[in-house]
Amino acid sequence: MVRKMEEDQQDIKNILDRVVQHATQFFDELDFRPASVNPNRDLYDGLPIEGHGALQVLEQFQSTYSKQLSGSVGPRYLGFVTGGTTPASMAGDWLVSLYDQNVTGLEDSAAGLMEIETISMLRELFHLPVEFSGAFVSGATMANFVGLAQARQWVAHQYAKDISQEGLYNVPPIQVVSGAPHSSIYKSLSMLGMGRKSVHLIPCLPNREAVDIDKLQKFLEENKNKPCIIVANAGTVNTVDYDDLHAIGQLKDKYSFWFHIDAAFGGFAACSKKYRHLVEGMDQADSITIDAHKWLNVPYDSAMQFSKHKPLQVEVFQNHAAYLGNAIEHPEFIHLTPENSRRFRALPAWFTLKAYGRTGYQELVESNAYLAELLTQKIQESETFMLLAPTKLNVVCFTLAMRDKPMTFEDIKRFLERLNQEGHVFMTPTIYQGIPGIRAAFSNWRTKGEDVERIWNALCGVDQFM
Ligand SMILES: *Cc1c(COP(=O)(O)O)cnc(C)c1O
Image (cartoon, rainbow, N blue to C red; front, side, top):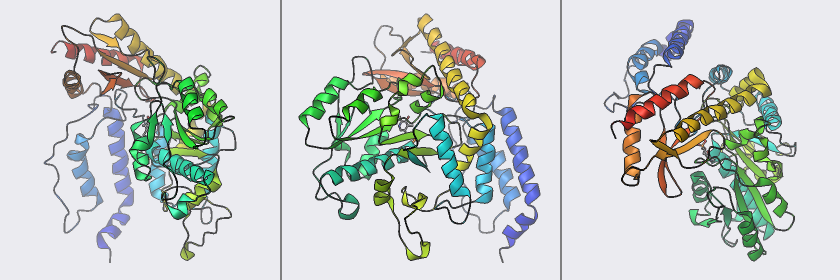
């Protein structure tokens, strides 16, 4: 008998009520919660022999552990590119756990069809043509992995080989060509057995993170007989720079390569008429990565991989077993991504897209870009800070103005430690063109003009101690 679990089930209404109370209190306090915390490592007390039951555990969580969690869902967490959680997406996310579907195919539930509908809404949101199919994965790193896995299979086909059957052994080394790739590209290539060193960097334009198209073309010309993979970047993490996607697409007429775009958060430029030109040519890609847990503002564990080559994808990821009964005339999710069993990841995205629509996301993107511009103006007018690059969209890349000597990475880290410790804001360091700096990434629907004031005061407050 599963006694404790049955007791809890008897009490489920009470348990859920308490969770709702906890959530309500969390939202009430979110504005005052520190953006980040330095966790206490002595909290952890191990596995109980006799469990405590859900209510008591909730109490324990509430009174100690929850206070050690960051305010990353709040308006002034500007580290990495973190994104928030819209109310509708949170409702959807809770329901994912309630229904606990395993979205491997289309047979036993509408969940798979809802994933297809969600992908279709996202295609509309990003103005992508219907040739793209798509599936949810856990994040942009996995979406890049899925894109590159198909690319690898495609390159092998050019040599009349099948990597999915024979491995990499009989295929010449594959070059992955890019201007300013995200670190997850290297990680994916390591996982794919192609190796981090398969990246061939092409110089970027002066003072930019966008690839120099002439130099890219020169490379392609010199390697005409070697099919390769181009990883184009649509929104780099430091300066939100974009490769000229249209120009890269045009090169496909002359050269043989797979065109992957990492548009983890930059793809959202497509939501706004004002910024859509940045992703012009995205439709020409073979595969595209876009994160949902960043600018779509759904909870973590959500990204989309789009592809024009579903059959290749199936070659790589198909999974057969008699007990699964899954013939692949209609290959669905189990045959498309690294996972077999899959959470109903589409549901939070489905909720938020239905709840806020195209206009909601246009407003979110434009509002975040406006806030980044506000902070940019303050930096431009200040003597304490200086921009490292013009602000293109939603990330402000800046540093402390030089005093008697140039700032070191240690100086920046010390500054950020003080800043983040105050709890008003959380920002992360970077190095841009050899200069240590700070990134402030706006990607949360909650952030407002008054937050930029608080952020600015916090920045100026720390400076007095430096
Ligand atoms: C965040 C990011 C990634 C990795 O995304 P995860 O969701 O953390 O796996 C990849 N590429 C770019 C451009 C990103 O901004």
